[in-house]
Image (cartoon, rainbow, N blue to C red; front, side, top):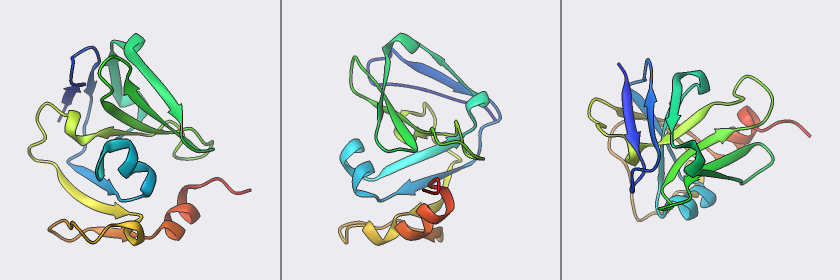
Length: 142
């Protein structure tokens, strides 16, 4: 299955080849501030995603191991990308809300579950990881 999407103003669009049918949810403080709520990311390998309107994308290095991309025209949060060397290098987590058709996509994991505010919750059973578990699995060692 292929998926497509765009930012709010349409300056940036993308296509994802061989797209997954799952997405992940991040409850960390940084993602909540960046997205204005919970961040739902649609995972894709860098070589599966092609962007149109690259000149409208700007990035912010939000940590030593990742950056966040957004449209510099309308501000839409487009993706979270792993920049650290290792098996996840280049992996993208596309903003779920930017998909043209999010049907047939289900959430399968929630990370930073220990930072989730009490004001919301998601239905369904997902794999859950605390901040310590996420850093142990994905952050580069010092």
